[in-house]
Image 1 (cartoon, rainbow, N blue to C red):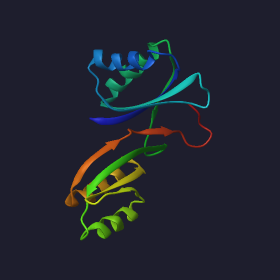
Image 2 (image 1 turned 45 degrees about the vertical axis):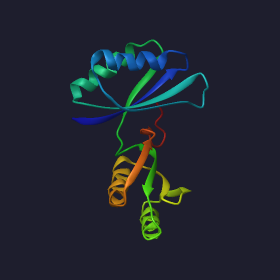
Image 3 (image 1 turned 60 degrees about the horizontal axis):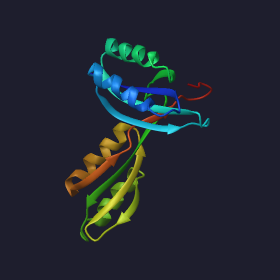
Length: 162
């Protein structure tokens, strides 16, 4: 199944997110990630949803979303053609013997050290899904203690607006 990134503009009213999540739950669609925030207009929020499914399922999701009164616009973002990123914090086990190696690898990925502990390092990395996954693979041998992902968010390039 292919991953799809949907960008929605919605009225900034209480209950909107609940109605959208409820739609996914009722229809049996999974949400892989979800980010929400206000836009340049405080009366409007942008919701970015990453979901999986075939083209028929995606069309059904878009049709159902457009039926929700508070939804202003729905657009699929192509992560390969648009600006699409996620933020991740990852805590890696570190010892005096391997700390410099871990930091060297993090510099290749432009990950920032945001916390240094006696037995761990916390990194902040921002990027496309494949970059984040590659960083995870490089950190696995050292021991990933925990991580948190913001979920994808994105904008169209150039003059294009949602």
